[in-house]
Amino acid sequence: MAELFAYMGWSLWFNRNAKRVGSTSLPTDKIFNDGVERLQEYHSMQDYPTQQDVVSHSTQWRPPPHSVYKVNFDGATFIDMDSAGLGLVARDSDDMVIASLSECIRLPPTVADLEALACRRAILFALELGLQDVVLEGDSEVIINHLKPD
Image (cartoon, rainbow, N blue to C red; front, top):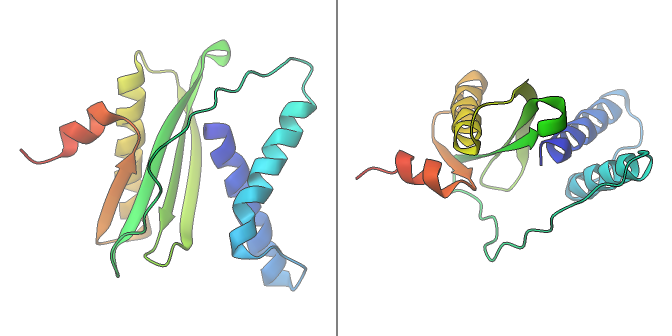
């Protein structure tokens, strides 16, 4: 997942720069597919076979209420490199990406620790962006349950 966030960040950055200098850029709704295609191309060029686990989710992303931002976060492990990745995406209520971030960190002891670090980084990210009303969303039930008020 962190790899995907990295390619998404690259696609966002590339398209931002293209628009800034007046070059051809992708429509906003095509940037996600561009990132996915670039990641697939990267994997196809590697010397080693990649194994991708397909995870199906029965839920769909829903935008936050008007004037509220949603920051999605996730962590990914890279055992062979003794590292992990954090991926974040901030969106507004119109489903527009405000900012994204991917970060490589040292491999924490547990997956729960990794998800907690991703959540912590999402909170800091929202503060760095100056966002006031924020909804955090991640896929770790353990972390989300710890954040919920009693």
